[in-house]
Image (cartoon, rainbow, N blue to C red; front, side):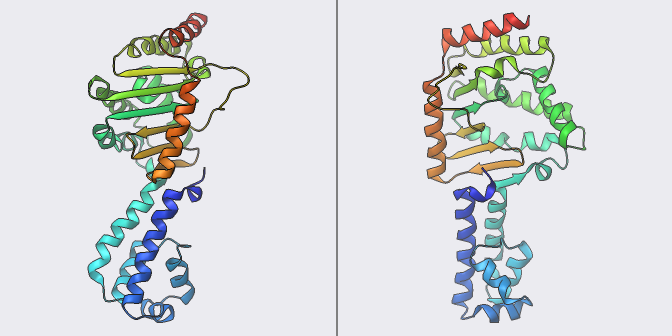
Length: 282
């Protein structure tokens, strides 16, 4: 899923362009008149007002000034920042290192009471051991981040796991069976991780489901995602980090989670798969 295909992103961009177009209309200005006041080509006004081009903060300032509505500038720029925040490329999120990216989700974790996570390739961050986390973040840093603050980022992720201790929160984790045997680190690290899954999976507020590898699956693997309560979904893609809040999109991911959950095994069934892979590695 590219950013441009997200209805959440498109709806937010359209709402911003609609507000700007209303300011122009309320000021009694035609597009060409607004363009002249801003010193732009008329086509720029057309692209912004139809949502084809996302304005910059300076564009919004100029637009509001031309419409004699500078009192709307701060609010519209805040809306712009919200749109920009829905789709963040990794190079922007991680330009100062990995710690900031890890810290950015702490407020979201603290206000969420129901977590649902599906990952086809890794153990979820909230369930990772120290060494497993270090191996994952070190691989990310080597691949795309110049700043080496892996130790700090690992510490932040480990501290985030405190939310598991809150009995008022509920956690449902789904993983593909292949996650159990695939790892970036050593066999010893993977064994330690699998043993930790057996421990944390026994917590009363935590559900760990493993989707067995088999033919004739009713639902094939999809991209990894997290659902926070019923209000937000985050998806990590190759090129960036997508935040979805459109109710229809949140529901689509919730429905997908439910379908995948139906073909997972839990409790004794999950423990059997985990122990089988652990013993093969040990």
